[in-house]
Length: 374
Image (cartoon, rainbow, N blue to C red; front, side, top):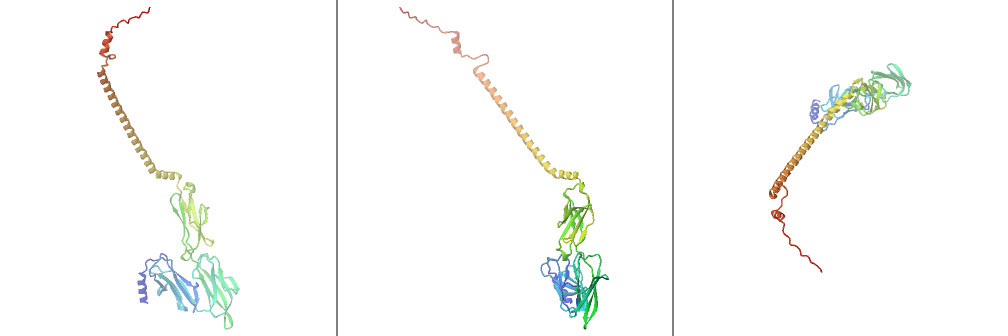
């Protein structure tokens, strides 16, 4: 046995990834009580993404028992009664699963796992090879199903308020005679899902989440959520576990709760009230202003740069225009002086000297002869 334990620990070092959830022991058939000589198989059920060499280890009453994912008892004996656990690699051990092996004439069988809201079947059965007749069922000492040929009892929508004691009495034939035999079982329904917790995610809009967790064996159960403010429904039941406050103004402040239930409404639970103080509108405006302030500054800076460039450009154009005008004025003045010096135009119009002399001494013209006609 010690060698097997050492080998199990050695092989567990080959596991590359450990599970994040605790394993659970599953019985097949599902009854937690069987007769001597009957067979039962136990399976280590685990939600694991582990890869490599996966080593499953079994324990009975805290002591090493077996290595492998399943453990089968071919012919159960009273000594097989006890608490069974399994482990994957070096993960935590599973919760204990109780198995009772009885060698009496009658047993009352119940499923190994019972959850709140379940429809549970109890079976009052006699030892194999013996005949049974009428059966009666009791709960906490009160008859709930009187004598009949029906050897099974259906309990609908069981709750987990407390441990519930059930008993059956049956006529079992022995040596041509029928004798009354009795057995009982205590059922403690486990929690299907945890009570919801309401949490707030700050932002715009403010978001409320309704958080709960299902039992690993019932993790495929469909859950529905609804939300309330000051007792008034603000979001009807749906699969969405979130509620967004449309606008975080003061009018939406109040006491919020959420409800969680199964799709068939067998189990319903409500969260503890949570007061949510919504932000004022002015606060949101301030936040918006702060968010757009950097963009505004960039735009103003660009406008300022463009204005400076335009101003510099226009000053340059004006300077060039004035400079050209001054050059034109200087050129005009120089041309005028040169023209006056050349033509001596200082006082009146200039007349050439040869023309002046002809004006002062006009030439003498000879008289043109006159032709007389007789």
